[in-house]
Length: 152
Image 1 (cartoon, rainbow, N blue to C red):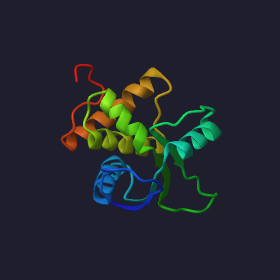
Image 2: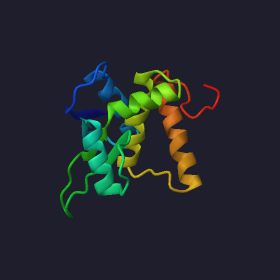
Image 3: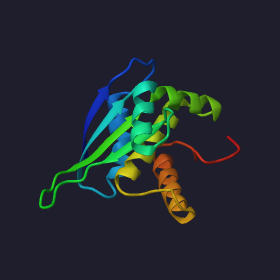
């Protein structure tokens, strides 16, 4: 599989993952389902994250990752799966709070967001279990421990 990544760094933040890491993480989540994919990952500040979260989800606060699947017009086939908007400030705060390495939590957010772009969700318990199982599997393949364990 090949992921064509458009990485947009729209804010200043220390210790961001490399473009190669983003590509690896996105590829891990998308390759079981797609032969080729195009994806935009935008690294946004808290203000932009909050505005988008409020506009599209009705939640007036910044969030870790937002997923915007691309829906092609009828009869048009494109490999574009959509956009992820990730707020590194929130990811960093969560990593500290959950006592996880920053880049490992970032990997989880990319994989989580990519699965949303593919149509996976966690609204009900059965869907959540399926999505979490895939996240754990893909992260384990990257040498990253289960992000849902309580004893971390």
